[in-house]
Length: 115
Length: 113
Image (cartoon, rainbow over all chains, first blue to last red; front, side, top):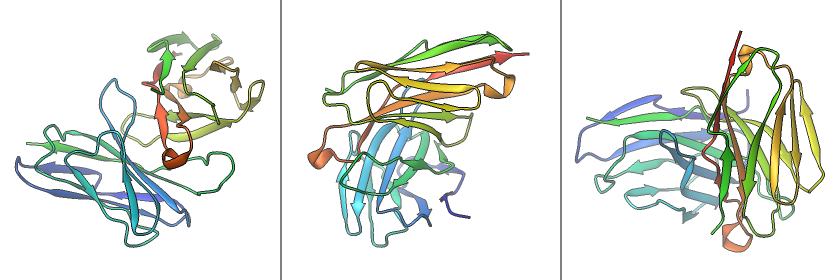
């Protein structure tokens, strides 16, 4: 089955720790995205990558880091510098064409809780 | 600044009671409008993309429409399984922002049997 997988589903972190969230897709999509979702708020973009070995900051990149070494993988590291990391994290991917904007497809999400 | 606003924040319907959800936007040079459905604790599921004013798309009990300033998601004779949060999103302007979406805060729909 083609799709986007995220792991783990639930993650608990102690203050001061870095944690890495995994995102893998087998849709052969060029672009990948990380969003954060808080209760009562829309999705906010953390980082996005349009091509391997390249990525751009989104609206709330502070305290996060990413890498894009493979087309199918886009891991997100939540560092200890992120002041309020407890949230639901969503990964998405899309094709990248020069025409109309492409639909983003989402993974199942990772819920991160800081203890 | 690009903004997407959804209303109402929450909507309670009786089974079979049709209604509409609104998505208004201030994105300049709108290049499309996306609708998603999200169930609690899950990732958003894609529903529709609309690219130009006047366009309409349907899927089962849902119909999405688009004008120059807003989009509506019409729900006809809803069932309890239609209960979810509905999100709309608009692409940012092109250039280095290509591919970025601005999301509304969502409308929580509850359909009672």
